Image 1 (tube, rainbow, N blue to C red):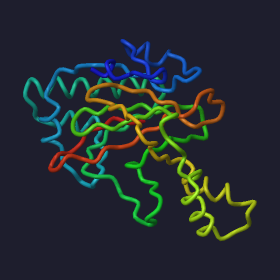
Image 2 (cartoon, rainbow, N blue to C red; image 1 turned 120 degrees about the vertical axis):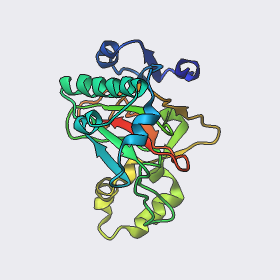
Image 3 (cartoon, rainbow, N blue to C red; image 1 turned 60 degrees about the vertical axis):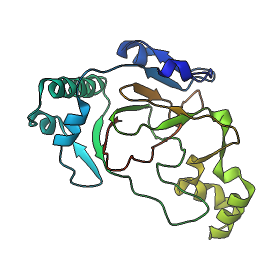
Image 4 (tube, one colour; image 1 turned 135 degrees about the vertical axis):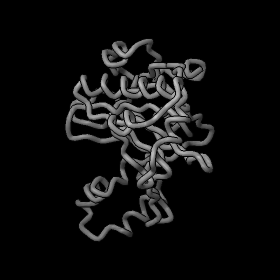
Length: 232
């Protein structure tokens, strides 16, 4: 159970969707988990969906068109219910069938893809919601167990060498290329798995945010297995 691993003061478990959306980020708390043990056969749902791209958007219509067993139908109903709850909240949830995300291979000293520990950023007031229904689950990590990559001396120097502009524009360069959003684990750090079926709400780097944004990453996919992920 996720609750057994929330050994920090930063991640908190709630018991309902209402608690999840009403809980306040404060002090060090920057992630809430509605811990769930979902009924239904989500593997069957995944097996019936068609992968069109490495990351394929799945609509409610796509789900409704699937011919499923009783357990598969229970899983489908749960997914649609989650999508509806978040949509009614004013969010824009997306259901993704994932073979693999694009990898950032441009530089050998820093990565800016979602497999790297990172924070989300938004110009408007919003939070990140995540739920893995099937496949490998991502991780989050307490902020005091990571270091911003741009502050690591050898990485920062290489970024300065890469930057073609005035010194006064360097910080803007880091932000424009998303380098400042990525983090490296400190020695002895302990990531926390998001788990399967749990609905998470993570703090985002945005205007008016009162807490540090939550650091998280996508997992490496299991061989031969697609992920089914709700995200918004």
